[in-house]
Image 1 (cartoon, rainbow, N blue to C red):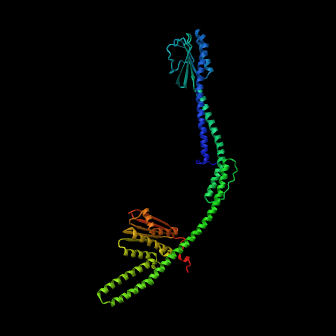
Image 2: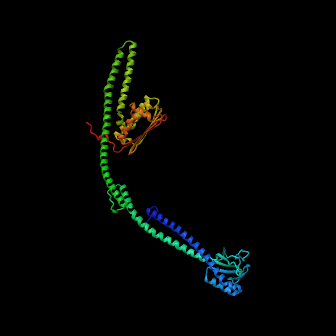
Image 3: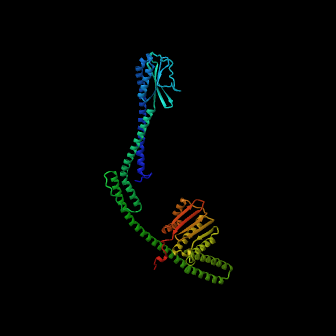
Length: 484
């Protein structure tokens, strides 16, 4: 089984093995400590018991001054217990009566510091020191009589430490074996518990890919079984909802297509009405005004007084200005050059006309892209947006500088209208809406119908930026409709 470091298997194993290992180390440490304490106590007891036994055995030999017998007794005791490294018997006045050191006391062997060994009471003392063989525990037994002053027995701790070391190794091996067995058991049970979760994890990834026809076949009576059952119910509901959503999405797309058609029809109807009004103004009203000017010129020639001619001249001038306004209105309602000369030329002519009528603002125009391939529908939309935006700037922004940028690519049109005017905030926009100043709102609605993006960035006294993105795909054209 491949267990990754970030998997639940690995984490559960670390948790369980770590807990067992720490508990084992803790219990092992307690065991080793208690064993060490007990062995040291046993070692001291061994030294004391040995000293008591020797005292009973060699007292007679000491009285008889039988040094050979004393030596034999000491050597025999030394051979019987490998923990005993030496035995020294001292007289009450501190002299050495006998020792197991055949060549005399070794250098560095500490002396017992009791000045007077002729005491009347039994006494057991001990001292610990380092030697070339490791630590030596010396038990000093003072019988408290006039026969033997002290029996000193040196006991090595090496054997005890070897035993403790062996027990430590056994404890560590036991802990490791328990950890390995626990790891195997834990891995199995974790796998048993997490197998349904892994299966559900794979199923969830399939659901994320859009495959809702999933059913898990793990039959268990525990919590995981109930979880799998709940997951299957969820998958069935998701599958049902997906079908419903697919149906609703298809219906929504139909409605969007229908709305696009209605939008195109609305735009076409508006432009047809604008064209009709423009034609009537040009062919009807303008021609009538031209006829009036002709009659006024004839009448001007028939007048005799200077006052009458000046008055009639003022009427002719006012009529001429009215005719020019009607012609400009006709062009604004339906610019004929948009279809004849293209979008860019139509925008340039419109901006020139604005600057001629409003000398307080400078308008820059930047464009990029081949607009000759742009559909009539989008060309008309772009022209109307720019027309509405510039008209708003002239009427309300009090700007001295404005910039129009339009970029046409294969997928979209990016349009920006920028001015350095007084700007506005949300409160100002709401007040303008209540006063039926709906220029920006109508622009936004038109862009939303085209599934485009419309953004206004404006602050008081910091100007306004209008950013518009219009997708060029799936936009109906005039040729998509049949008008009769």
